[in-house]
Image: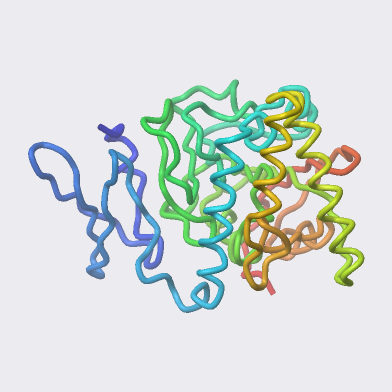
Length: 294
């Protein structure tokens, strides 16, 4: 059974009105908003993805669902390389992250345990959200949801984290706006993201695919051995690339400079960053009431 405290945090992700719980046999089975929208508790987890999704996300929804299916295979088959469990990597990110107060981890992944970058946060201060239901039960408070439609009240968190998840969302501006909405005044948004090549030409896409495959293969050899690593990479190569996606797992690759510029227009400042070669980690503080992304 889910930690009952999570229900007290939730609002309708579309209208942001409070939810009333419906119980059956002493267990919460539905969450109902004033608008009549209903959300269901599945395997003890509140499932807060609206059905149907709002029109702004609908055109790319099938693409997004295929990407999630592809990602689930990689996360479960090779979690060490795909679910942010590398403590050396995360230690470098934590040098610029500000994680205090209640922390929302957007894209926490499908595993039962918390990712390495939030390992030092008290469990009572941590909430994970992910579009994949993943392994259950989790060791932490978990919500099944998406970044563009956060089911939490305004100014309800002291810090928000996007760790290797911003390139999986459908609408980066909407996701950042939602993060700003749920952050308290003075709260911090913390982002770790790839500095992926932005070439749109066919040759650039091929180079990008080969580079990513090589990184995956090296990680697979370390974790699985050579034969299983070969089978793993061949399976990845066969996963379909949905129409409009950059590869089998990513809808787009936002540029760090563009993300920072959007946050600045929303009233964020006090940038702290660290260049990590092919990645970058940075944090920014919410100094003003956020304005909508342009």
